[in-house]
Length: 332
Ligand code: BMA
Image 1 (cartoon, helix red, strand yellow):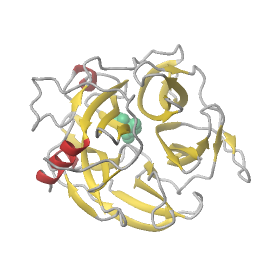
Image 2: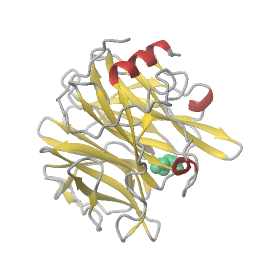
Image 3: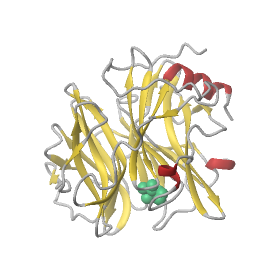
Image 4: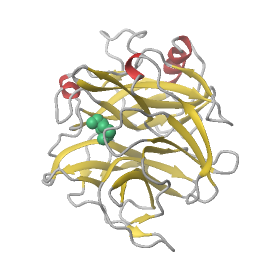
């Protein structure tokens, strides 16, 4: 058993459920919440679907930014809150971003797959943002989940899955991303970039490429990387192209703490794969897509939020030491 520990705050109130007895430890290093999905597609009147969403701890409670595709099937971002991380109240109206100081008002096109990251003094939001109609990484910040200030886009099109690190690395902000194309990109590797000011991004490095099986078509970072005694724990999605279309699964890697573009270990088998009805059937079948994880450093508990079949929001659990032991023992 690995003695790996999470480095971070103690959060005893995150959602938690013990591993069910029918789920053996070796194959069940990640297990689903028994009451999935936690957010139905029509929780708010305006939504067609609520999935691929990001949550964070907030003043003893939880807040989040949710991907709510509306009933016109336009992709929108909505703010929400919860006392227990399970029952959520989500605003019926989408977030109206205000321009951050010195930034011109940007026209809203679409937004999807948000991530939320506390760094130093505020919550940063990154998402796949329409930049003159094409996808790239949008960046904003908020202090209260009521007013959101939009900054410059991090990159030129085409890019997706922008995921910030929760602290500066060697003095700079750091972000993972996945350069892409204008469609349902049939390729994609994970890259690392740094910025002194959250506006100018450079010093790009390749982190990892696709490999065989469930992660053979494209890969993209999921939740904010989790700092541990064994490296940055990065949960990510991997895509396989079947004769019936893309299949999205979840795996994990450990990245070097000082130089996160160096991969220390990476799972060969997937950790979570579309298996339940709410993952296999929906607007896009066969998708598990993680975008957030709440962690408790004292117990190593992890609550992983993921989208099911591009339709609903689900929860899965893991213990950091078991997960890290599994990654090391089942590494490529
Ligand atoms: C990706 C994104 C995700 C989605 C996935 C599967 O390109 O659009 O939001 O979950 O496709 O449709």
